[in-house]
Length: 229
Length: 80
Image (cartoon, rainbow over all chains, first blue to last red; front, side, top):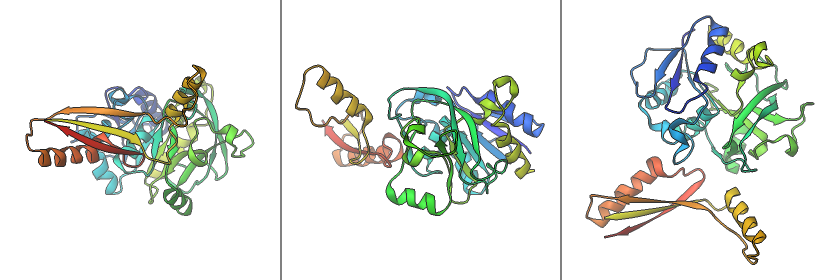
C-alpha cells in the first residue's frame, strides 16, 4: 500500500501521520510538496494537520487551490481514497470534496485535549478497524473545528450514513457537554457519498503508539491499510 | 479601478465573534446593541478600467476563492 502525504507551507502534522502510516503499512509514504501536481500514482492521499498558508483568508482556502490539491481533487473524483485530518478536513470542505464548512470554535478558544469519539459508521475503508458504536479516545487541537452545514445537507449526511464520528461522553452518549467546539450534531468527521473521502478534526495519528500515551488511533491506520491491501 | 469586497456570514450562521464583541460592548457600558455581525473587507486594486468587466472579474474571484458560499455572503463596491 503506497500512500502520499501532501505537505503545504504551514503543515505541522505531516511527519506524525507519515509515521503512523509507515507503522501500519511497513512502507514510508511519499511526501509531496504542495507545488507538485505530477506525483506518482498512489493508493491513498493524506492531507495532514497544521496551518497551511497561515490560515489566511479562511482555514484551508489557499491550500485548496494549490497544484497538488487540484491533482488530488481530480484523483478523488476518479475514486482514489483521500483522508484529511484537522487542517486537511478544512481543505477538503474548501475544495467541495466534502460538504459543509468548519468555522471558529463556539468558545472562540483554541482547544487542545483528548476527546471521546463514537464511531458512527464502520463500513468504510477508514473506519474498518473499529466497530460501529465503539468509543475511542483521540486528541483534538484546533481553533476552527465547528462543523456547520444547512438542514438539507445535514439530512443528506444522516440518510447516506456519511457521519463517520461524533464527539461523545466516556459512556458513548452524545451530549452538548461533550461537544468541544459547537459542531452541529456533535459531528467530528464526515465521508463523501461514496465513502472514499474522509475528513475529521481529531488526530488519530497522535495516539497511535504507546509512547504517545495511547493507541486508540492505531486501529484507524491498521484498518485503513488492511482495507487497501 | 478599486474594488471593495465585503464578506459577512450568512444570516442564520451563528457569528460567534459578533456575539463576543456584543458582550464586550455591553461590559463596557454600551447598552442597546441588539446584534453585532463581524466580517471582513478585502480591497482590490485592479488594472481593469471598465466597471462592468471589473465587476465580472471580482464576482469570479469571490466565487473561486474570496468567499465560501456555504457560510458567507458578499457585496462588491467599485470606485474609479
